[in-house]
Image (cartoon, rainbow over all chains, first blue to last red; front, side, top):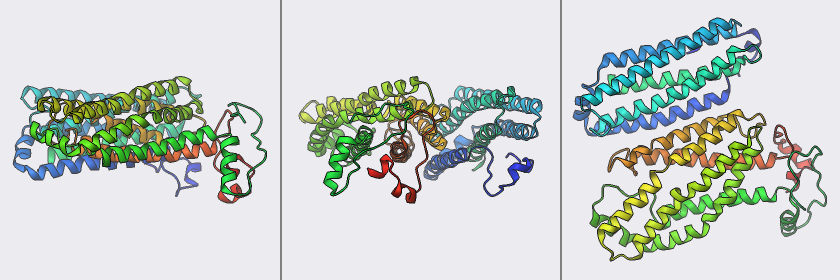
Length: 197
Length: 282
């Protein structure tokens, strides 16, 4: 997550009230966390009712692709954290480069995810194959929709950083918070679908 | 007294504030209150959603939805058990369906009060005016047709059952676009009509509408039209979202000053008691 230690002196004057970006975005993080907790709960309850099917289906997933997806998104989170840090220091060119890197890692994630879907479908594992793959395609798809929205959000970051007349630090941090949420949700999805046996 | 036009530069002044009994105050409010249309639309919204809940959950019993996996005899038996509730309940639904008009107008008004293009309000108004058809009326017609003649061919009754629930649950994309329009308007707005977190909550609501799409495919499980994800979680989010926007619209009306520019914040309770503002005399 974004390092808060590098904030400017005027921001450190009110440490108890400070959260990166708009506090409203943290409400979104809360809403999304609750919503996905609901989805994960349904998955886990369904799993307890047919554990053998879930274990057998999980074996059809390639753990290496899941690890690659996770590394791609973690790198994107690292890049957006560096972008926020550079922007706070007024180094807008490195900030822009890091925002571009975030988009690049996001695209790598998305492309690798689509390739994985194609591979699974070729193996006969589709959305209607069984309960596990219903959850697999649902959770990964809804997450990818968040990634697509994330590209719009990262576009806002680039737009803000591009011109000296804009450069709202609050907006940059708000957008970074969204992107970290996308990463955070993926780590949970990865753990549940690929790792937990 | 006619409603003051928006974008006036003069502050709103009131004459003859009501004193005496609540009846005289009610009459004064009815005749003179500059926000009477807004409050009327807000109360219509509150009453409509209460009626909607009672009619769909307790009278017609179509919510929570029964299973899409039922065979024909079970579906026919379900109609036999619920026929009076369906006929009477959906009869009332047709009577009150028009309440959507002032309700949607108030939602569009909130966007007109924002600093954003009018296109948002017009888009929202059109989407939600059309949404009443797949969201409510088609289901009501199909259900009534099925319940009206219980001795009809059972296969036809089953057909109407599928048609009703798929039209109701499977068409949430319309509402998704509506939520997104409202969300973008809130996030772009500089008049602080709604807090930004409500814009983000609108995004959550829009994303749950996407989740209903698999209801077209599945007969059972979490993604069927009565499933844990496609219905139960969505319903929790929808109820929360609706409750929140009803409260926020109430605050918006209280804050409305019929001027251009940012909406003023609500005064503290102590200040409000001594204020000669419109809300203090309401």
